[in-house]
Amino acid sequence: MSSGISQRISLWGFGGLFLLMAIDVGCAGETQVEGVSVKQEKKMVEKSEQEWRSQLTPEQFQVLRESGTERAFTGEYTDTETLGTYVCAGCDAKLFQSSHKFHSGCGWPSFYLPFEEGSITKHSDFELERERVEIRCATCGGHLGHVFEDGPPPTGLRYCINSVALKLKESPQD
Ligand SMILES: [Zn+2]
Image (cartoon, rainbow, N blue to C red):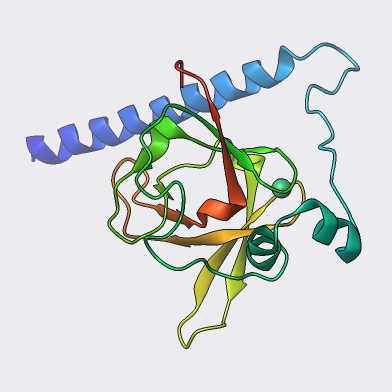
């Protein structure tokens, strides 16, 4: 009997915690400056095929604009441990950080987290027999790679990215 009561009490405890979290979030939202939208409109990069062809190398064009895949273990950043931020090779948008990179052994640079939530977009890809989740740059729409659910903690995700779709901006802090 008594254990049933204590269970119920702990459930209430959880409920209270959620309520507190909800209040917290609500307060954070209200701290925004009145009448000013804190969320900045993201500038989208749109170019014609001709413009992309003249800007990108043939390898970059094939991956970013034609959803190609570089051969495993051939990419510049597969085993790189240099500290810095990985930006899009097409538009310079920040995509990943070296601190979220790990050695997956899959042959492509792998990250367990994107730079920020809005950095990338996810799309269903039925190119192979089983469904995969394709990853694109949210700013220019360039194809980057795929995400799989066999990554390390804390996300359990493996963002498997083509090296040619990335450029590493070295910085010792990251
Ligand atoms: Zn981009």
